[in-house]
Length: 240
Image 1 (cartoon, helix red, strand yellow):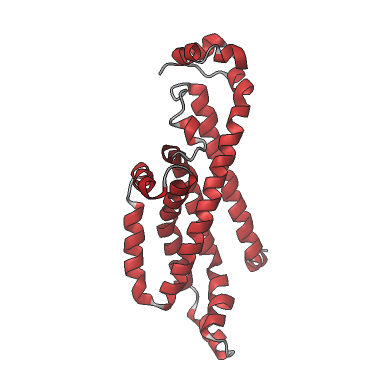
Image 2: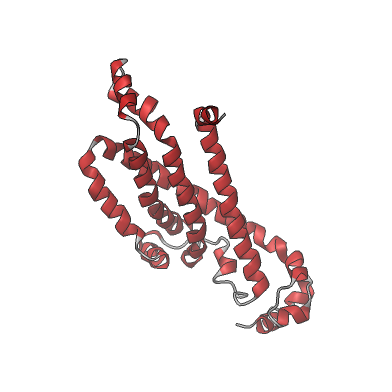
């Protein structure tokens, strides 16, 4: 659908919300239109943030638990890696459509689908981080009389935090992008503006929505990085 047709069908959209009508009609980059219509994107941005935070939170809780279990029961690593990798290969749009008969339309299929995509990334980093803990540290903890659970949560997990949160950062960035396709599940978010909105061919709309997705990914990455620094004060001390 052309921008000019959108203007005609919207009953004077540009005149109502401001902007350069000729720029919009010619499908150009229109700073005035962006300034006049920026408020239309705040609600989709918050919806997008909600989808990302909730799905990554749920996905991290599941993948971290599976990682701890597989660390204890090493034979589980291969099958769990295989299952999570297989699920990750399912195209996102297909995943959202497959979940709709079970969960309906809306946030539920979007959150479940996005949480599924985080599994392989976080699970692998949890396993790798725990496996890379120096053996002498574990032996020293055993020599101090620590139980298996105490060694795991007081020694191994803290030392594995950098690699675990590195996986979380990748999962967050990936989920921000995939959440755009959650619009096909009726979940809203910036995907409504970027992919399935009536102004899909309008350059200014794509620039604003795409720019917000990029900035959201960067902001959440910095937030996770800051959280990692709080959890690993010894790394700052070593660097100093």
